[in-house]
Length: 200
Image 1 (tube, one colour):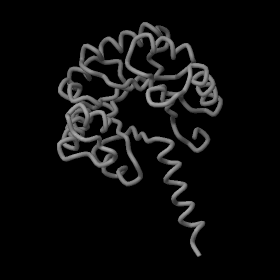
Image 2 (cartoon, rainbow, N blue to C red):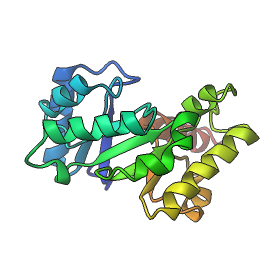
Image 3 (cartoon, rainbow, N blue to C red):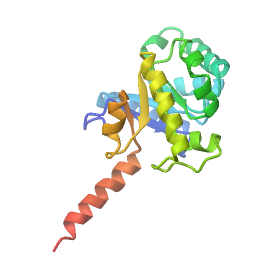
């Protein structure tokens, strides 16, 4: 992925089975290939930030930010754990709870956060709506659009989980951090390959 030109790679410990030892290996591989390694830990918990910094990751995408108070705690722990170079390490907050959207202006006023990524599926669940799975309900879509507009209007970097079909719409809204899953890319590439390979 680094050699193909991606600016960073996300190591997902929240949904994957990656171990601390493997995180260290993957971070080293990313560095050797010339890209940044971003960890998404199992949760936004202080000891995980400290632990994964020890594995050599370059930055964090912290899931399930719940409130402005929770956001402040995470910023403080991040700075405490990397006192000499936290300014050079990306810190991304995942906005995936309706509570976080309500408090988004206060969260963004804290400083020390490089980007905010709006995630649809957990947001839908926090609203009592079906998981988006690429097609959010109108209610969830309205909340996603609200969050994106709030972030962009405050002059902050906004991210979203995208696929090839949704890139233009998100970019038109001001999203500049484009995030997708490697397994989605693999599946899409495999389908294209088979559609050509199986032609008569």
